[in-house]
Image (spheres, rainbow, N blue to C red):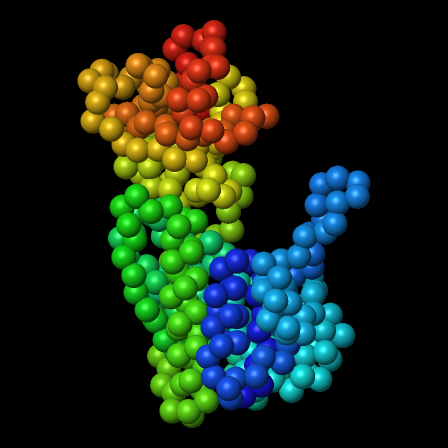
Length: 313
């Protein structure tokens, strides 16, 4: 089976490695990924994607593209005569690409479709307080994340687990499901299920606007929001006119004080609390604009503020 693999970030790497070691009848003929990213500094070398690095380690041919609609790219894929195209955390492919796969093209998605269709399923599952998520493989079709489902695997979301940690777990689970999907396709004995449109939920792209903390919410929701964006792109707020990123927090029962206006800061006995609509949340690690990420106790050792009370917005 001739396989073209398409992916870019670290989430896709376990799947690539799993295919490479899974079956002598699986032949990875091409790996497609995003272009190298420039590094800071006049003489700094560009940085290859995690998938490119893994592919080169495995001795696989690599092609980089940032335009999947370029006719030249379609021509290149055709030259490799893929039986199957596997997509994991890559771009939206036009039909002219995925229809070249003789046995079909499928995507690995980090949710239990049709829940959390979109660019950031792991983040939004945590933000919305889900206790269970998983991965899905599905055949590509014209509309994004709507194709017929091949396989699913569920997993619990840990109560303190953040998006980065969950992504690492799901990437490993997903690699196993990708290989199982390839075996099903190779066997010719594959059954698919149609997605139930009544159960659809969305996982839109993360932006500056939708990653800002709303302090007027209950502290449990604020904590889920922070977990769902940690450690990248990170939930943020403003403090004394500067952006404050909050990397980790925890709802607390104490201190036993009126929480007052949402967003109010309480610094008590070397600890940093912020009020929500129904109590306090403790900030455990953070990054103030212009500073490095740090634990809160380290931050407070050098922290001085003039406003009283200090309120985050």
